Length: 153
Image (cartoon, rainbow, N blue to C red; front, side, top):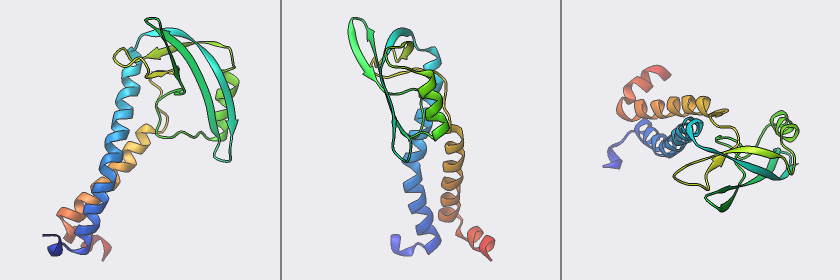
């Protein structure tokens, strides 16, 4: 079956197979970011705030209690990356300090899933658009390789 595919179809299939899980995961992140606006909140405490590395990795950890059980989390908001641009990391370093009391919004179904900034989803929409474009390109290459050939020529 695969031997009958053109190079464009094979490339399109590979693109769709690679992009599909990334797109599904990014859509799930978008969904969780939207859901987090409705999550209950509790008071929590910032445990650590550290910025390091050339990619600006930020270690921020907070703790909170739900139904008498203590949880720890590092997620500030839902995003596709664990790294922040320098200006974003500096923003968070100024906003959050060790020992600071903060509102923690937790998932009522999974108490260990929480955010400090519900609804925020920096970069997620642009990632969905970009991944959708790549998936569409793969789809067209797989199901209509003549269109790709005509476009290239």
